[in-house]
Image (cartoon, rainbow, N blue to C red; front, top):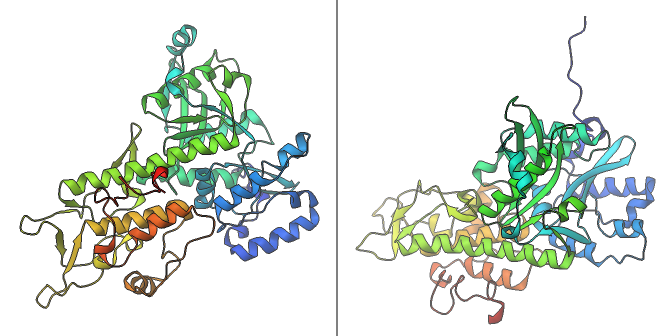
Length: 455
């Protein structure tokens, strides 16, 4: 009797694994070949893995709809061959809904969608749980992130063979979900919500979605047939949790009657993008504020990076003070280290260079400006998808960070105010970098990146 082999995951055989090794140029060449076989794809913008996602968003938004459902749909989608988790996360962070679909009978691709109208709850405090839902909720147990794979499997079962939760996409979702404890991937954290029957313990409803800053997006869900209002209980429980955690907005995707019953409304894509960016701006404010707080306490963190910022009850918290150091009383400006420590992609020039004050042994002198450099690297990553020196090998990276003649390039399409703020943070001389607060030039208190009235 032959050994049992598990069935391939939904759609796994419809996406060639070698696609994951294609360079951006090879992805474009492959896409051109596919377009010759499927002319309908030519109407949709193609996105390779290293593309500027903000520019992609602008291209999708500029496509006019001439009328009819098909024309409307063509103005909402782009397509891609890569399912890498960082790429999927960058799309989600920008406002796309990362979906997947079939191109041919035997081939699927990524179909990021940016709805012309988005169904949202933009005031979570107004969600009112009906008495009937409260009564029925007593029969269930609600949890978060306790059964991610089981929820994915049940979503596929309920929605059938054409469910867009294809294997390469859910692999990316799973990778993002597994990184939640370290801050997620590209500032996106993937979650599952579960509803279990209190008596039997059976999983009877749930959903998968993701959080970025103060916005939570629902992707898809399920409820078991015959379970009395388990799906409704799941929605109201999730809404209550999002409200308790002070989320700015709940993004529900396409408008449907049951969503409007929660208090959702349809918002134009321009309005949705405005709120999304406001929430992301708030994330930047909280990040700067958290670092300013430790600087006020005369602490230099020394290892700022995205993984060391976590959202706790809707507020951004700074963690991992493993190499943080207090400023000594006899020097109110700097700390000293006898070795290079930190994460290279976010390390300042002075964290690498010997200050020459160690009497023969290497000694690095760092001040608050060193953390400001790291913040600049994080902000650069937030708007471009990678750190300023990410493409360089380690030795080249070390040389580039400390070399004032090495010009830092900025991808096209980034907001001028963001570029200006980042460039100030990444000045090679510590004394030239702005403070976080104060002096009329503080990043948090004064810069036009966060204060449009000061342009």
